[in-house]
Image 1 (cartoon, rainbow, N blue to C red):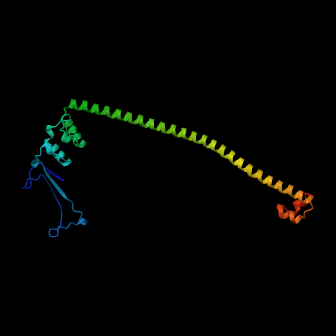
Image 2 (cartoon, one colour):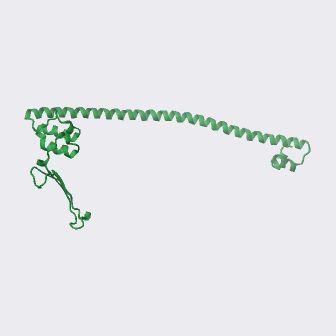
Image 3 (cartoon, rainbow, N blue to C red):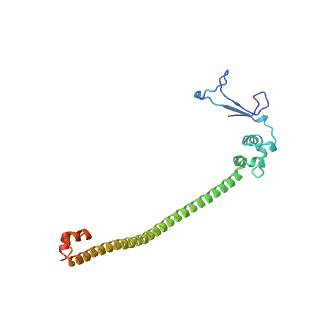
Length: 206
């Protein structure tokens, strides 16, 4: 981009873009890496503030009328762009005398120091909060885990005991049945088939 403080082109346009294209076909060749060139002729820019609607116009207005603006009276048409407002403020600083610059720099240093103090305090508070939260969360998780473990262990123990009790009860029932059948003279083969006990187990009951 070329910003000109003089008129170069014959027409009244204050901005124009020039690109490299094939003269006959108007085709562009990206592989040549040819750049577009934009020219801004400041002296041709004469828009009133009420007609300024885009960022480019705001910047050109700043460049052509900067001496008329101060940070405390930036026109609203320009103030909508934070970067333009900052540029006006920085330009004001350039016009300060030595004493005024010292005061400004001291104020800026104070603001930066205050910001750093606040940033550090917030960072420490966040870190402390995270550490305490993590510690509390781990402790809570440990306790809940233990409680769940006890409950789970009790439940599993009861379930295991129930199953083992059933198995023992079934086994005792088979034995009692076998004893009764033996007393009634039932053959060992029939008792085996009825109870599922082995011949040795049945003989041991005589």
